[in-house]
Image 1 (cartoon, rainbow, N blue to C red):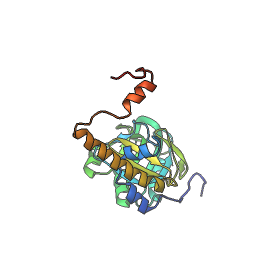
Image 2 (image 1 turned 180 degrees about the horizontal axis):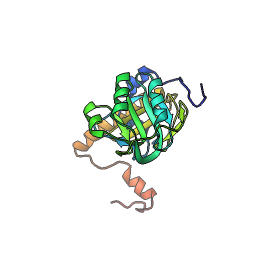
Image 3 (image 1 turned 120 degrees about the horizontal axis):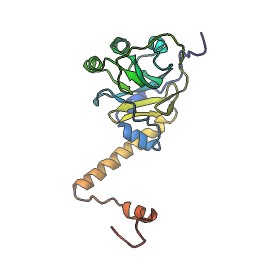
Image 4 (image 1 turned 90 degrees about the vertical axis):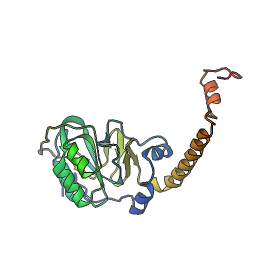
Length: 226
């Protein structure tokens, strides 16, 4: 087999996927050092859509989906197709037929740095798709690409098997080796935020760090207050 296609690779474990899937993308992005979030151009077709799982990476030429068809036949149940479509919006890379095949095969969802189509039908399927909008033009199927290699998607490096989590806010990628260590930190982040929200609702709306930060930024002089 051509080395452009890597059929298998280590994946983040199903156990870790299950543990991490319950967090918001924003929580994981914060505890990962405020990095790993794809560019906001990649958004859910519908805000309710969510997906989590190991990345099955695909690189294609703009407007050509040949390698996506190959990837669908190679991906494992639970995988998330993560496709570097070069941000192209002139033609859709996937639509109802391919999404139906993905759903039937147990592929958890699709993330495309490119366009999709048949959005109303995908909405009715309730299948999670994240893309750079939509376009009714169909793709070509003529050009080779790569499967199972590191890609750039939404400005973020995605290695095959990395953890991908996407919700209404966008898409976050966490390196496979780092995910386990972030889960307890994410739990603490959720608890801390819940406590702070409770304090705000009780009337304690002032941010404790604000004064010092304004002084450090030179907005206020030492000893001055808002």
